[in-house]
Image (tube, rainbow over all chains, first blue to last red):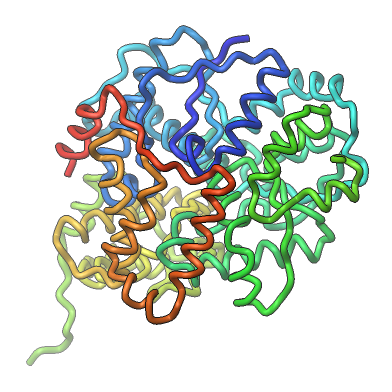
Length: 286
Length: 189
């Protein structure tokens, strides 16, 4: 199966671990990723905050390029890129209220959030078939963040208050995804850099709740959430005067673990909060 | 006799809606936005108050508020509003308007990060994360205070760790269509 792929800037840099896991997992399941040729930055939070028109046109350029590749599906791992591309498609194809200088000359492909792509009935069945080491002894919470679900008039999500994609994936891999109330609470996104005090408070709240429900690790699909939850644990613990230190795993890493993919250890070794001690205890890595 | 210090702009709502629609005038002040907002602890006005002030035409109060900047764009408010007010989207509109009008932003660091981010990929088409933090620290004038407090050591350590883990790119990537990207960022300014 061939799909068009929009990695986004972070996957070429700070989210190399996520990028590597996606490439290997997709190859394992016969999904051929064809990168959008000459894609550009989606503009992220910065563009939609202070330059609305550019935020739509940056997305429009990407969609225009993606539409030239003949695949019907466009896979987007970063939920913020996903959200920006969906917003551009919505503004140009549905809302049509304002004029933009870049227009689509063909309909945009179907834009998929990566976790949702892996949570279709068909993909879940494939995951189940490929499990070699069920994640039996692992108790996790799935943390979805904001951008894959909201706002629903753009994402078309129906379970936006209680998303299920990663919970279903964890279950298909034989693991236990605990119910918890902060699935879609904000991690602070770029405020972690510009207002670290705010970021620490928001992420600390998530750690606290994950700990209270008994999670050993947090599972994410967003590299922004991952870095906010993974990189600043020492400072957040100091601010809160508490010990949290949960490993923050990508759902693709869980797929790699459960399907016994050999490259898993190299992805995991790139994290700041080392998940390997926990996974050794759970007998998922050697 | 002057009764109040307020100077409402009676065209403000119209101006806002022309850029939308954000459905601002649909607000019936139920405060569901404020109750679900994760960032109220850092705000000077609650989200429902921003909407109310916009309806009243109190433009200066809105555009000078911290609230519009510390809004994390998490979209919880817009998602839950029973009247379809696009609260998070109109917060973005206010931010842009404040920048365009050259209003002194009370959250300097937040706007500086946005501007640094856009400049980061303006000429290349893709963000170069290896250069982002340094440029932001310089531009936001935090280098001095970081040297004083010793916070630079933490930053450097984290950067080094990321580099060791192969997660800190050393060179920017330029795309073929970089001129198109530069044009998008220019013409819409």
